Image (spheres, rainbow, N blue to C red):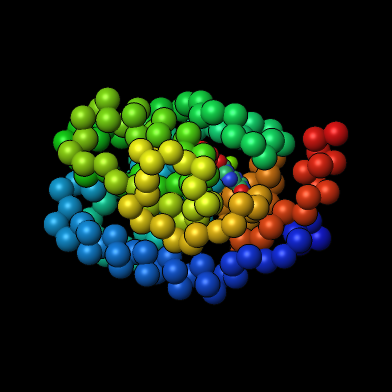
Length: 183
Ligand code: IMP
Ligand code: MG
């Protein structure tokens, strides 16, 4: 796995420090949560969620939704598709969408629209990473962990062709790895 990384972009220690700060920011924003539900976009956000919620000293539930935007060995967004719908009731709830990375914004826009149909009290978004904005202005994140360059990253939940999610850090995938997968 490590051999397929060009370089480590964010170390495990940097991730831990920033995720803890984000938990503090989120806890302050939801000082009086009215039934907070963290709606997690699977599968890329699982590690971020697990680390974040253990630093979050407020009452909350977890909701899960599965969306695919990069089917198979693609590194270009193909538009979001719902693979499994939300498993909890969010009517009248404060919702915080948790995603791994904001790139084109297709995923967040799609998930937000799906959730708004269910009449939540509020919807905010938290992403671990944000690439230089290809995202249109209507797609924003309220909480952002790290701003990164426009490179394809893996690890800490993020995948290429469903691999590398278990790397403890965020690394830049070697171009020859995805070029050889595409050929
Ligand atoms: P968007 O829909 O283009 O904003 O992309 C968001 C989704 O694409 C994320 O939830 C990831 O699953 C995936 N994605 C975007 N950039 C990367 C990357 O650099 N590495 C791995 N997955 C990515
Ligand atoms: Mg993915």
